[in-house]
Length: 301
Image 1 (cartoon, rainbow, N blue to C red):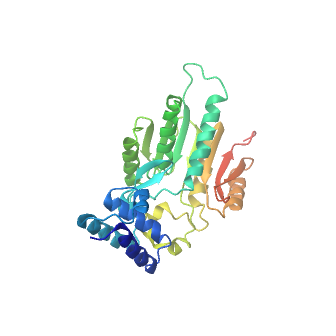
Image 2: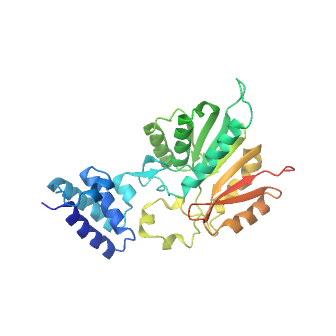
Image 3: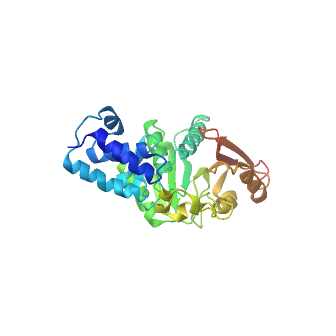
């Protein structure tokens, strides 16, 4: 009977030969998934024997990874913002960088809730997550707002053009017990008619340049192309949504857009062209790369 250490050593070598840039992490996560323990348990007990059935399951998953399939799809979930989200080919796999968007959005929401008195009968703050994908941004916000007892002060909605992605997002909302807090809808960015403008808008739209998509790691080829390809300059969908902000955003509203690490200047120029007089501030991620653009309406706009 093979041990944890033996299986890992063999798997890491095979993954490296196949071109994996995270061979050890991949092997540890997949073996933990097969055995039924977390990664820490795998690392801590290299001498532990692995049963025949678990070893066979590990080999099947390893074969999928060797063909390039992302670990998140193989395991069926991905950790994001301290939560485990169901993941499959219906939506993009959550990226750690997007946690910056959640943090900044949460700060903006709570600032608005606590900066002024909210007497009984005050309408909830209207917040929308555009391009929700697996629902990671909207669900993360909903879970955090409920924990902080702000959930009844916010009307949270989320949209995506893909019905399959919206179905996955609803599954994640149900799984985290916040389906009652988020209203999901299939829409091309936003519905054609917006009854009331939003106070806070968040968007993690595709921003990879079309020419770059074919050069991404093979794992990206398993993800929906429409969730990655942002057009020739990577800002095509973002530009379309910016054009709708005058009607979609409340007078003192804020829109937050996740962008590529090399798109800060292009984003600022785009805003000045599409929304003259509006302002843009770009915040970095943990690696100090430009990551989230905060867009606000000018006083005379």
